[in-house]
Structures are given as structure tokens and as C-alpha cells.
Image (cartoon, rainbow, N blue to C red; front, top):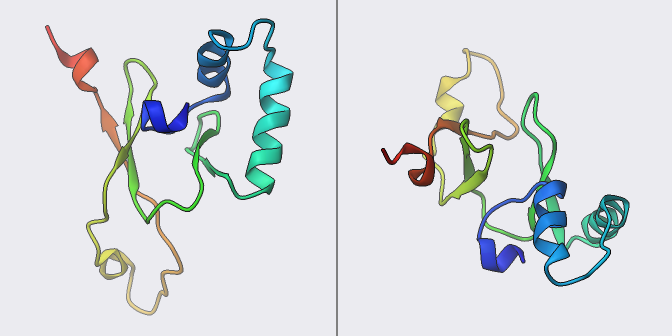
Length: 111
């Protein structure tokens, strides 16, 4: 499912996609599977402020995300702009970073 969509998914999106393949699939079952797969390292959590957690395949190279504010879908942005440590005030040490661009995806921005 994650390979097919190629982007992080919310539990609700997973439920909707999974119901096409598993009749009677429920949200609690999705959450149990997500917990187990995250603990096993198969998935990682993508946390965005004010948003429900999304999940993506574990072991991906460092990358960032684009959030469509119209449909709510989250997309991977390959790579990293780098040199973000230069944005920190003098004397501060950056341990890690996450960048999320917000706007409209092609599906939502077409007239």
C-alpha cells in the first residue's frame, strides 16, 4: 500500500485503502497494525504540528514533506536543502531538522 501510493498515509487513508482488500477492516485493527509495524521498524511516524500522525516506510533516506492544505494529503519531497544549521542563532547546535512545505497539490490546484 505504501509502495503503491508513494507517500505517507494517515490511519484513515490506510483504512479506506485497506477496506478494498480486506472486508470488515476496522480502524482499531489499523492502529494495532501500525503500532506493531512501527515497533518492528517497518514504518516510521511522520508528526506534523496540529495534525494526526501519518506513517511511511521505515528506512527511507532523509527527506522532507509537502502538505496539501486543501485535501490534507502528505507527499514526500526527495532530498534536503542542506545547510539548515546555518539558520540557527549563533551558539546553538542543531541536532536534527524537519521541513514541511504547505500549499496545494496538483490535483487540488488545477482549475
